Image (cartoon, rainbow, N blue to C red):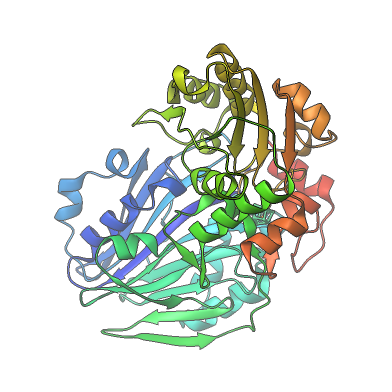
Length: 443
Ligand code: SF4
């Protein structure tokens, strides 16, 4: 089964739409490195180019430059179910409509679909009128979808599920209208952010303006993990700064879970703001003792265990002088399987650290996600069935402490969050048995 996606989406209406889509996709690369693709309308035909790997590997820049269109959608993806093919990559097109989305349509398998993108495409394509197609999606699809769609007449549509699990933002770059998973890339290209797409809302990119329709009232349950790890630190989701949320997670950690240590060491990169917050309230000096190699990819989004192990070995170096003979508190944003953390603890000990205490800026992840982020089945999660003492033993640390769910919610600063991977309470419309989801989504 290939039902889970976590990705970045982009749509552009304006001059050089394809090239701008390509540039925006590069700036969303942190959201997926397994494939990239672009659809555009050229001479009345919907054209899709896609490939495997990073944006620059998957898409030939010269070819992209030659695709002249005023409308385009694009996608970067990671998937986690092993089989990564160009065919399953997005945008997915049937020649009349192309779609790309970020999330997981949890009930696609119940509808008999191998690929949730295909379920989405069929629903949209089943109606001539795009708004009717999107209405059908809102009625039939359960789960997370922040989506963009383009038809062969050049109609560009963007929509966000009523829970707003995944971010989606509108902006302008020069005279061009853009939709993107995150606002950081829009600002980085000199654009202005217009606003977030409201959960349950449909947006049309007309000639020179956005047109809005609400299909469902919002019932937000935005992914807390976007704030903790996934989104870029310079992004803002629904008005809440990701960077500030991370600093507050670290402050909460420092106030309530302080370790007696000489230095605080962040796991780069997403944990740096958390470590800054921790260091501020505990007055523990920060040392950037773990150095990420410049070309390293994010191990969490590598699809197989072997690939992840190789990535971990390649991506970190240790500044021995910063930790030798010292009590270290190692700050991370989260622990999923524990592979990375176990190795980092041993690297620090090998570098001469006297003690290694681990502090985590999120609660223990004990349940899989079926709304767009790939966490493995419960038995592969280090925190499933283990308390903090057992986790410390497993990773070789002197101690481990996490935030509680309540502390996390208070630190992020918004209450309408999904926290199912910490609590097992899934804010989905339909009801599912966890065993049913696990057997469907696990290879
Ligand atoms: S289960 Fe966790 S990762 Fe998935 S949407 Fe909810 S908070 Fe995010």
